[in-house]
Image (cartoon, rainbow, N blue to C red; front, side, top):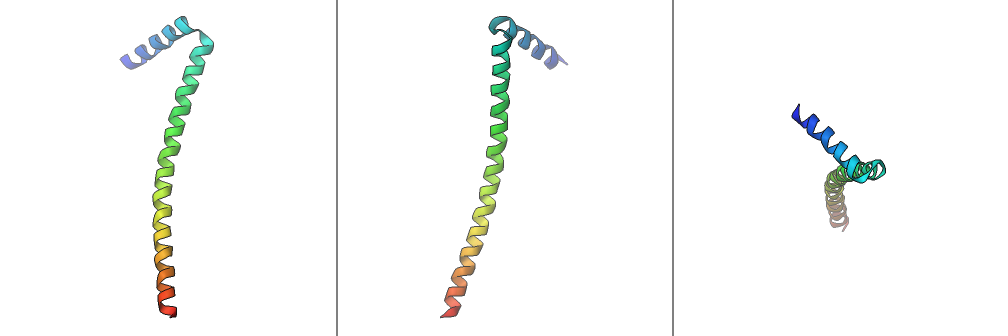
Length: 69
C-alpha cells in the first residue's frame, strides 16, 4: 500500500520538477529498457538452444563422414 503512495508522490514530483513531456520521456525510456532486458533473456535461451542443435548436427555429420569411409 505504501508503494502506491510513494509511486504517486514520485510521479507528481517528477512532473512538478521536469514537466509532463520530460516525465513521459523518462517513463518511455524505462519501459524500453525493461522490454530490452526481456529480449536479451529470450536471446540467451535461444542461443543455448541453437548451440545445442549445432553440436548435435555437427556430431551427426562427423559420424556420417567417419562411417562413409
